[in-house]
Length: 303
Image 1 (cartoon, one colour):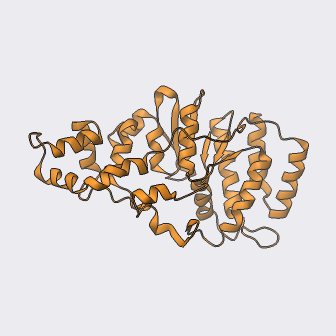
Image 2: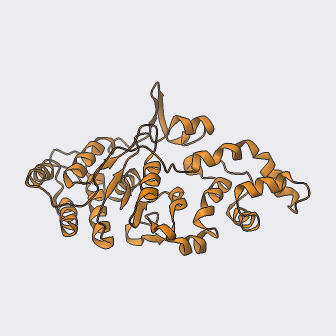
């Protein structure tokens, strides 16, 4: 089970009232919400390993260099070290607590400089020799769905009570393209939430129709450039007008699959007395109560 951690704790933060506080008055709604998510996911899907994939760089400069608008609307400020993400004031102080609780639960946090959690997930999913469940609210990760290699996405976009299990067939029925085509589909359609413009005038229906006819983005670009190919003048004009964007967009949207990640052990194991004591202290300090108990119980049942 690969957790798109930031996707989950942002959802937890917005889904649990910020009146949920620690004894000292600090907000812990994201911490408790994430723990409740972990308890539900581990209990329902029964993984043998869990890894918290981390955004060491939520907006890598190499992606911005290719498409300057990439996630630009989420930038709070620019520094010499890069962009600072706009994170709610009440969420920021909870992130170190989340990391500490995950560590004491035995869930490794895995990230890499200059890469996003998506890229960590892509790498771990591609290398796995066992079935993989990717937990995310990010549609870009649909490109990793692969029945042949037992990789599916458990999509949280409709909420934790409405989880969607995305397999090859489900993706095809829902979007009209295969998971292998989803990357090209996403490039054509664009995504305002990530600052990706897409091809102006080409929406989801047109993107699906083009991929159905020409198979791939390369095939569509070649068709638009070939005067003898039967392609409507309007669509040809739109694709050709977006040629510079299309040259780089795939590199931005495609998740990495071959990162050099640090060694980690995601196997769910019994909580040692030392970690149990640390968890008890964290629970008392931060008022994690039943949320931490449920997460511990779910993991202990799988150890």
